[in-house]
Length: 75
Image (cartoon, rainbow, N blue to C red):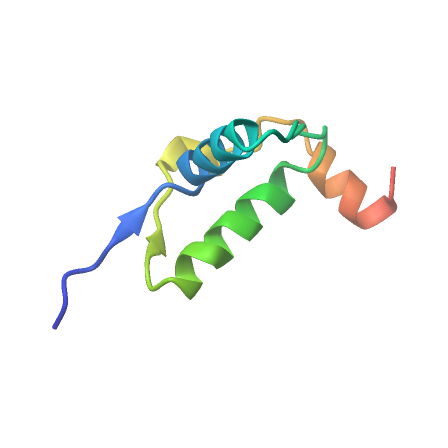
């Protein structure tokens, strides 16, 4: 059985942001869209056969439920 590969989705977001800047783009981290970024990065990793691995502290809601409010109420 192959060895499990893992990668931090937050690190992938930073990596992609840096790559986009190198290619002449100006990415912006929009407020309340953290959940979208993490979900997208995690999905990409899974699609490449790599498990997204987050530090336990990353699971805490540190944005005061802004992402949740935006998704549910559109606020």
